[in-house]
Length: 197
Image (cartoon, rainbow, N blue to C red; front, side, top):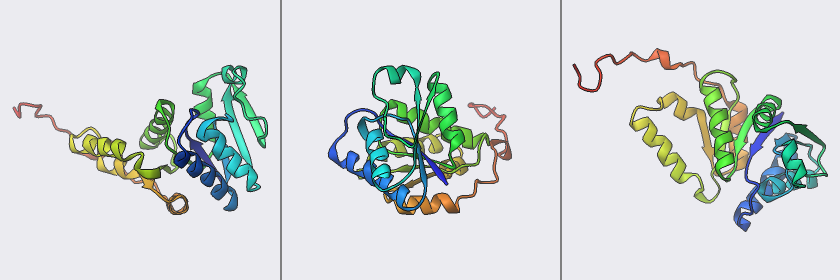
């Protein structure tokens, strides 16, 4: 099994770095290969180092431009260099059996939401989840629930996003995951319009 881990390349506090290293070590301990963005910095580097130190296999996928910035991790099991960010995301998801997002910045959210959207559209049937380290994702999850309340996100799609603060529990949920037998077309269409006429 392989898990795609999306996380940050920027400097992060010790809580997040420690959690990222533990995620890498846990994946390795469970015999799960890591697929990630290929950098040696930030929580990305911590995930890779945690897995490698625990004897795991780590595949990095990095755009050519970032190799030029000299942030590529040179100690990986395999480092794949691609043309750009779109190719990177597609390859990372394609190589993996599940997608896991750790705390990160705008890039991490972009990757998470794309993978989750692809699942909603049945582009893939892989589990997508977030490890909610120190409540990092609480504000985002509140926004997601607001999207449901306002009618922009269907409840079955909300439930597709797996959330936990324990990586082992989250991985167990990945293994047990079955995508919902649901599409947005299952709901009746509201043709009345906002005025109700």
